[in-house]
Image (cartoon, rainbow, N blue to C red; front, side, top):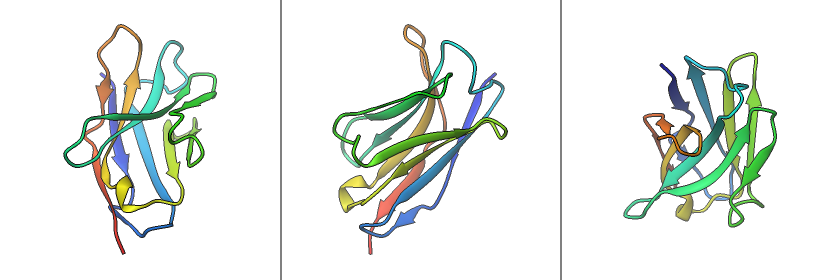
Length: 118
């Protein structure tokens, strides 16, 4: 059974970079057919898809976040990471990593709260 676990700082200062890592067990992030993504939920708002990294290492980003977002991976550690630059308080959210496949329910990490504040 696949398990995903987010890790990273819970507090980031405005204008700095947010970095999170998702550690995956029970499946390989190079498995074909699956995408490995980041989704966030700001307080009082719905889920926002940020981007994914695919089994071949290619990436796809939300147009609204593309200029500030980068997703990478470390296949030796079976991890993938999110970097979000120039953060503002509007980037405060619970950040989730997930395994995604069209037609299948996502497999979620437990989520990690990130607050942007000075």
